[in-house]
View: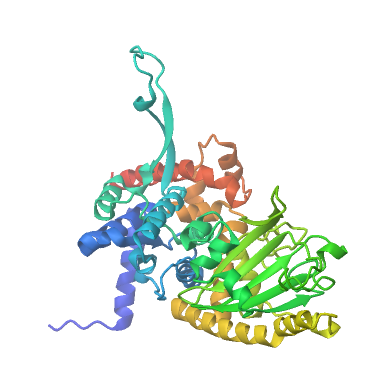
Amino acid sequence: MKLELRIIDVFFIVALAFLFGFATGRCFGQSPATEMKVAADDAEKLGAIARQYQYFTLYGVPEEDREALVAALNYSINFVSRSRVVVPGERINATMMRFNLGQYIEDKEAGEVWAKVFEMIGNADRAFKIETEIVDNKTLPAGTKQGSTPATKLVTVDGGWVGLENAKRLFVCTTRTASLMRAEHFVFEATKPSAYHDLAGIGATEDEFFKSIGVDFALVRKLRSTFGANLAKSNVTNFERSVESGQGPFGAFFITLDTNKADAAHSFLRRPTRIVPANVSNEPQPESEASEIFADAPNRFYRVAIYAREKNAKGELVTRRIDKVDDEIAKDTSEPLGDGIIRTGASCVRCHAVDGGLRTFEDSQTKLRYSSTNPLVTSIMQGFYQPNRIYQHMRSSTDGHAEAVEQATGMKFQKAMGSFASSIRNHAYVPVGLNRVARLAGLSPEEMLDALGTAKDPNLIRLRDGETFRLGSIESNLPEAMTAADSYRAAHQKGDKE
């Protein structure tokens, strides 16, 4: 007799099997352990080249948010890249991606820095790692008597809930202890100081920054090949702003001078001769407290930096890289749930994405028609204050940047930047509750509630009672929550078998 099955029959059989599975045993969700096994299996297939790969898991975010997170991850890696090529990652399955880190660096020194920073970021992912105290025999003084209280130190290790055998397999393949981490964790941590500075190779001073993109700024100034504008009102800052742009080997660069004061000494409009050499004019120079730089990187993404500008004991101007902008100068309005502080990295590109990558402006200086009794000063000023030349630089720069972002993410610029912003928001700023912790642990909210039934930590008790937390307040509690979930899972799997 010939057996024929209609499609509806197949669905019926599958449904019965699914229900039967629930009746006879638990069907737990994805967890750090399931993701660790996927990464270890893939690394073993890659062989020796696995040492160059970094794995990222998407399992911790809802399925409907994963497309955005993939785009954000691809954007972030290429944002900090030091290479001249744009390279998206490889998708292994619905929740796992891998990146060949050798494609984003171009020398041994950068490779060493990247290895160190990735290890730092991965070791801070509390869904996979835990800090523990161990005896540090190396620090014991010579002649210490047996039985003395030993010295201890904190170390970061794989949490017992990740599947230690698979973690060992992955380590053997990659020779790195943090070669798997959550994608959303990396996107947030890698695009803010100090990780962003280290990964992207941001110099400690303005001169070092320009040197990294092949620009001798003093020489460029001497050749009078930059163009400027002074803004009475900025779309970003609270006071006057001065903008200067030029061209380097990789494309355009833009540097602003910013202040937190409104007096004459800090007015770029009242003191517009800052680019006139001292041997031509001795007019007073405007004072400023900070600068922001956007420059076309070798891969056409933006390289960004913020510097403090101050006088040393000799009265000479010195610049110093800083992590954030004085909020009297400007506030970050691009993230409604954030703290309003502009930090180097994500804050900068998220803010400028509003206008296609670089914030537009209206020049105020040319309207004033400045002239000097010294015709050379007038000539230099007229040659410098040409905002249309800056606009040309901006159009070329933003077009190339948008093309690079689309190449990395597979999305048009505005959608890609929206994905980047939403991924950071969902991870770092949306309050964390029981549902999110349950997803990370691979349990349903109801199962997670049961798993935390004996929790002693105040935060976990509050979580169990329905309270929510900012990420920084609950992150350190994840290892205990993961351990509780692992114990719950093991107990119920054992009970089901019995």
